[in-house]
Amino acid sequence: MELLRDLRETTRLLFLQEVTTDRHTRLRTIAERLRMTVQGASEYAQGLQRDGLLTIVDGEYRPTKKGVESLHLRFLE
Image 1: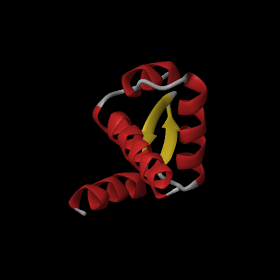
Image 2: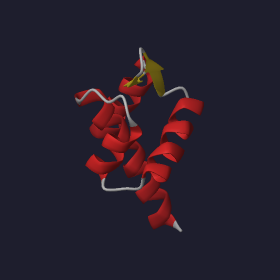
Image 3: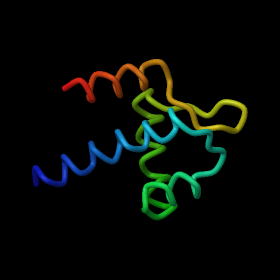
Image 4: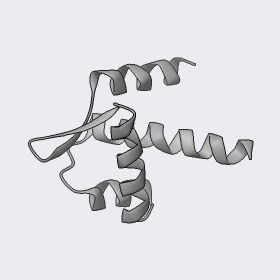
């Protein structure tokens, strides 16, 4: 079970990193970059939005300030 938690957290970090470094207006492009389904990317996006780490601004998926801080902290760990 620990492996699944680690995989989920790693995917969340990769998602945040992807929207931090590239501009994305569609979940399909994020899904392709992360080699996951669009449905999977949608679920991660919803979770990140619910946690206040991701937002959509002018049609683009972008990390919030809290999302960027979270990403930096996790990489420092």
